Length: 293
Image 1 (cartoon, rainbow, N blue to C red):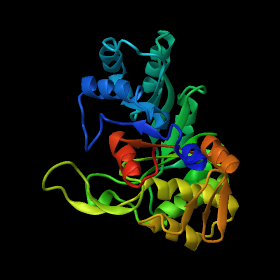
Image 2: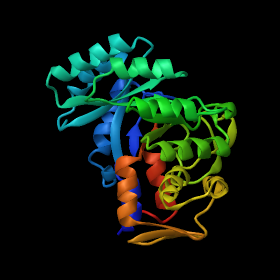
Image 3: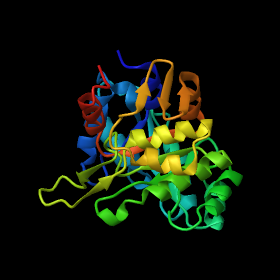
Image 4: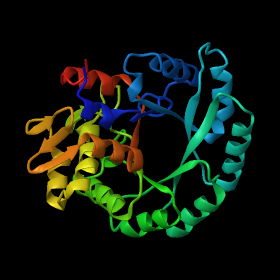
């Protein structure tokens, strides 16, 4: 059986983004995959289906061929026209389908844009604002907090330059914790631990050190028990679980610990999910580490 603390840390953590690079699947293939993953033995790790607002109707058409549709939660990527896309989300949800948008993702580089997003997007939709890293992110995250929205960090991409330094990821996590802002991550978190990987599936893909989702979410959890700035950078940089002790009721690292109940609270209130164009890669890597049954 899986360790209880790890189950709590990873429950519904993967927002499936198969439409996006480097997978860049067709809508039909992405919908088929998501339907299969919902029936997989590791479906407890699966979160929302990520889709641009402009492709919501295409998604609905593709999903008509899914026999056991059930209730799908969507995270919709909003474009520059917040009001128009908000109206499309409301209209889509009002059709009463089993597929519903309950989260939205927008980009904003200023407090004014954050405020516009807060005014435009429906209040019953959880809105994540992608924060550009570099410099002082506190002002923007403070604006997100003031507007009762959520933050989003881009942790990678298909070129090495898209991967932010460890220190910038640590700063983002620290500011979100300090200001009580829930967050999600996106891009480049296919693998549990920091490691050098190919950035695409092409034979000549560039390679670079990629962030690991266990690094990111363990760092978020340990912050609730006094993780220092320097130790956050160290934890985000770990390339193995040596020194990390995973037990049913507690996870320990160095002089820090976090309990099962605290992990559940962190995941529910703070460290929400990460978007990945692959669901199999996170699962397969966890299997290789011996962390899944």
